[in-house]
Image (cartoon, rainbow, N blue to C red):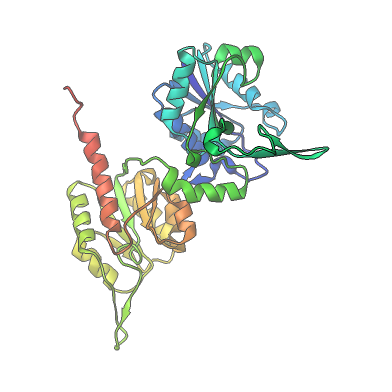
Length: 388
């Protein structure tokens, strides 16, 4: 085996409790890390070193092999290198290259991992780490006050005239395994750097970092195929623009999108069922569902419980279900499914919980967009291999 990825993910975290299971873009950080490693073509096996049963379960479900970390390597004083060496010791043979990937960096591009691995395998470097290239002016405080780091206070060259510095992002380190074992540290020999975009340089160590990562997720995350077996949607704010017209007799009416209706029809034709789930008691919800030819549950107080029961009764795996919502009463459903989706004008907590934020607004093509993404995923899966 040439390349193995090890992801340390202990359960204890003081800055952000439960950090490695915190969701960014609707996906736990440890699952995002495993997914990035598995999508890197050069990585042959992914190991997650943990002392936490919930992290272990999430890692296994994501496709990693779990290494149970002993208590002596799980405290605050334990180094990441000790976890790496312990995990490597569980393998039948030592890999040529070890990829050390951290859950705290939610936006790792598998292409960057592959490029760093190639540099080590080709012999150009013994270690390659991810970094942000920067031309920032940095200062340090000493006994005599502040002084410039890497520059003179009396001379301020233009950005284009300054050599860049590199700030570690902490996302990944790719190392020749023999060197890691010999030195017991991630840096040795010839050191190379893989510069990553600023949007990928976020590291989650504080609640504020987590909030930034969640806000960035719709922009920094890589588009994924929307591969699901069933689509469930809220009604108000998803099929509508979240407004209602109140007539003089007290009745209400809403506006819906004909293109959303076509999207549902195309999705049903592709064999993917759709359910409308709403707390709204107005009969307009059932009327719209009848028009679309889809089942509906409305006037539901506890949407998450109703959704869990419906998925169970119909035989659908929640991990292969998508739910589109917009407000706080959708949060339970969003955490239940594998694909939590939000419309762009959704409540901030809903946006933070979403794995995907749609580009089209509720009542203006949001449902159509979700349907088309599911159909596109199925088309890609069914496309014959080129050259055959």
